[in-house]
Image 1 (cartoon, rainbow, N blue to C red):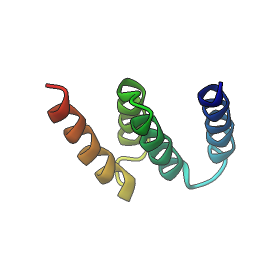
Image 2 (image 1 turned 180 degrees about the vertical axis):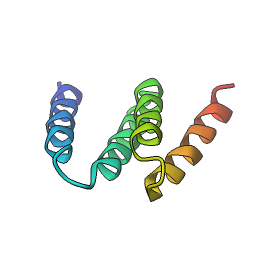
Image 3 (image 1 turned 45 degrees about the horizontal axis):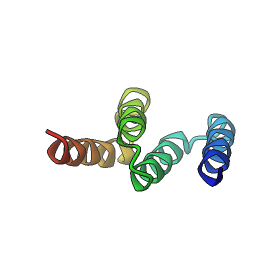
Image 4 (image 1 turned 135 degrees about the vertical axis):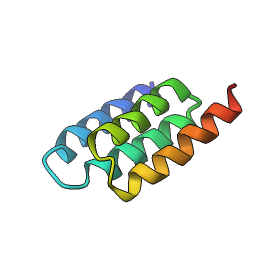
Length: 75
């Protein structure tokens, strides 16, 4: 139940963040939380979304590194 509530809070946060310039940051932080919860598929999706939506941001570089690490952990 706690995880469900946390996911809802993160979705609400992302909706609000979509109105600001910090969307890549919010996506990255959400992806990190997903990794902590062993939800690697969703984390991967979020990291890829950062690369698509904001490829020049500092978070795009961080997302690339995390994607590489996830690929190495799950060949």
